[in-house]
Length: 274
Ligand code: SAM
Image (cartoon, rainbow, N blue to C red; front, side, top):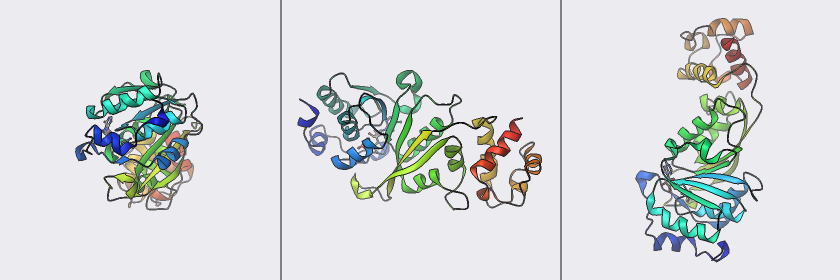
């Protein structure tokens, strides 16, 4: 059997009894055209390595294989493995499935150099994003991130200063990547349909500014946005050297965190790291 001969996903799900499990955050995508559009977000994948987290019944995996990728997939729900094995037979030598928890896997050894693509439950997706954005080595081990989030989280990742969505996640994402919303996804595209809308975010590594480490920036943004309504002179009081850094850089300490640009956060972090 080839990829083109595979039965519709609904049939695969019914035959393998893959009813969506709420506890695993399962909301499946079945629309082949939408899945192909998501698989195009990372760019041409012919011959490229993709690390997919949470393939479930394999809709997105099928689209990635269809685009010519070699896929390494990690899925914690063993009920999905037979359906994924069938998919592997239709793309010989191009799909490796690992049963396990993506939060506990040595990704670098498994999938160094891969494009990461995932449609994950909200809590797992955000935890992995923060980890992938926070690697010490830069450029990171991954080539790009194509991730489904609920729309509100997607907006927080790409948010600009002086907006309600701008916060720690925006700064930690944008200080050394280009992040954009690639595709809004209507909630009706999922089975079962969640209450909220979603969006696919595309993130590619950019140059890392000199003299700043993720650790310092994480501490700074944690303090600044921990009390986002407060003035910086109040919220940064407990961070050694921070008020001095503001004075040195000529940043008004009566401003609030959400008014600072990503570049200003980077400048403060650089001063703190000296
Ligand atoms: N990719 C499929 C799709 O788009 O239809 C399934 C998406 S469903 C929202 C999320 C999938 O991630 C489920 O199959 C679930 O079992 C899996 N999953 C949840 N937590 C996981 C984890 N920590 N590690 C690996 N897979 C996980």
